[in-house]
Length: 137
Ligand SMILES: CC(C)(COP(=O)(O)OP(=O)(O)OC[C@H]1O[C@@H](n2cnc3c(N)ncnc32)[C@H](O)[C@@H]1OP(=O)(O)O)[C@@H](O)C(=O)NCCC(=O)NCCS
Image (cartoon, rainbow, N blue to C red; front, side, top):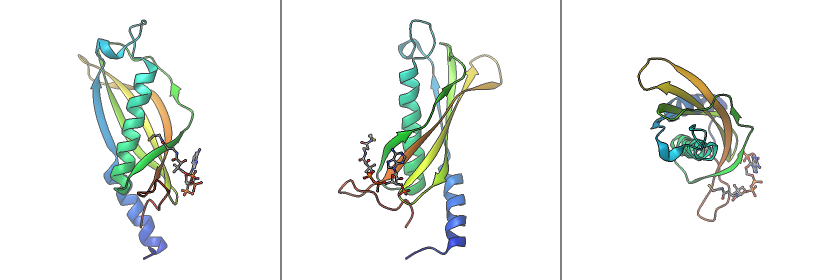
């Protein structure tokens, strides 16, 4: 059954709110490069994982990543810090949706935090034949 436009809008707003996903990670030596900052490929992998979790929690269907937009690494992430990754659905299409990921750096021993990275991922809901299906029924 097709949802009325108004109720679809309200449902989307509610699902965006409920699917916002937060995860923390300690930046230990295994995740850093020879500059003693977090390796970019590791951060990208974490961002894709949070995007996947956010999209899955939004639509509760099988999801694949189809694209990533420009990703800005504004600040290096030093070893021995904490990072918080926040995923939020920023666009809902028919079978695709966008998830914005923000990554914040936090010192272990001081309050406060700073945004280090922003990027957007596009993900698609698929069926058992791996073909696109609506993100919302
Ligand atoms: C995702 C996949 C099933 C889409 O198949 P497709 O034949 O391109 O499907 P469609 O052309 O019908 O597009 C489906 C949706 O994806 C969007 N889309 C497809 N390619 C895109 C791209 N490169 N960037 C952004 N959106 C894209 C379309 O706009 C459409 O969105 P809408 O339904 O909201 O309007 C297919 O591309 C695929 O299997 N890709 C590999 C996914 C994967 O393995 N990811 C890595 C592991 S998770």
